[in-house]
Image 1 (cartoon, rainbow, N blue to C red):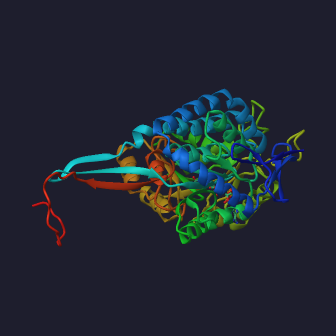
Image 2: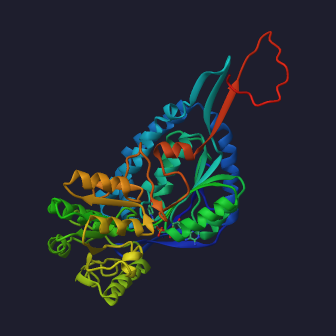
Image 3: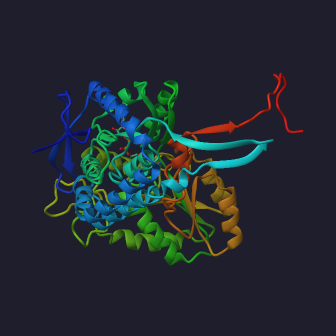
Length: 497
Ligand code: NAD
């Protein structure tokens, strides 16, 4: 059985921990490898290495840093098949979806290639008489990222290309459920010419996370994962005087208006609810049927959910793969049981799906609920599986209120042909990412990604312009070069007269 190690100072590193985690292939249900669960000491040793690497890396001109990113981009493209297969083997999602997620991560690398432009700063000549002023953004030092299982390549790539292009060194703590991608990406960045110690991967669980939060030499922490852990990271990182952005869970609504193109909405919902087995933070798990469209929506959806092709991710015919672990499968099944008990109507039941040859795999079929009410647990809580709940609302106002009252505010979409409704919706809705006739409105790399309410703790979204702001600090310099004139001491605030 293979052993997944840390990647520190440009090479694999065993560290001093005896603890190991199990990594499964979710399609077969078999354990495929072990991952070292690092210790506090492993993390602290890595921080010392990253601190030294920061000194010379931050002094490199941004153009040189960008050239490493250009080379990294080329290497990812060349190795995309291998990386996508790694994603499928440890996460379970279907191959084309895995490739798509890698491309979305690659786009952040492409954005990071333009870092000289992003770091240009601002200059004002003559802020006062013969006084000039300019602002620059400087890197922070050692930054850390803690990432979830559901996007083992893309989410780490939201973080480290931006942090590193800005001149920081970085320590990544990937999910212990599918850690191989992070190791591979670190190897490729090293091959692209990144100096040793600038990007390090320390595998582990809570012990490494807590060591990150406590280490005084880590300046900033980026986190993506579930809301309770995001809150824990936010509170403890802030308590230890670190900059922090902590992205949490979601319950994304799709508002289906009576005037919409229903086939378009149904197709959009199918991909958004069941793609990646619903294990996406931008998955749509609630469809709000407005006015009289409910029966037609449920009818069309149920016909499609019943024939959803569930199978291993490497099978070209599969539309949806397995869930990540046996425990998660049980949790999702449990939520379906709860929904039935709560009185929602289970229109399609995927709980008993069995796949020949993959009996031990973590598979569940697509599930569809109708008549879900806002006080039910299946409406309030994030299930993170292929379970779509249809809630009925009498009008646009009631639908918008449902979205605004929900504790999560990651993504939302509306399907309509009414420009007025769409414009009001995008202006008034209390959610960070909004789609109009777009089911999964994930912003491109040159915008920034982030939710509102309990889907994000902190001020800055990920990557794009917000990423540059997060991974740099602002310095403003005011200067004059007097010759001959000797000014007297001034005891009042200088102002422009
Ligand atoms: P998780 O919160 O269980 O784990 C995320 C990370 O935190 C992992 O690296 C894990 O090792 C670490 N961790 C777990 N428990 C911890 C603890 N008690 N103390 C310290 N660290 C701990 O999340 P997950 O199950 O890997 O991922 C799924 C969740 O991530 C979902 O809630 C999903 O919505 C969310 N997510 C959000 C976004 C977003 O952009 N908002 C993107 C992807 C995933």
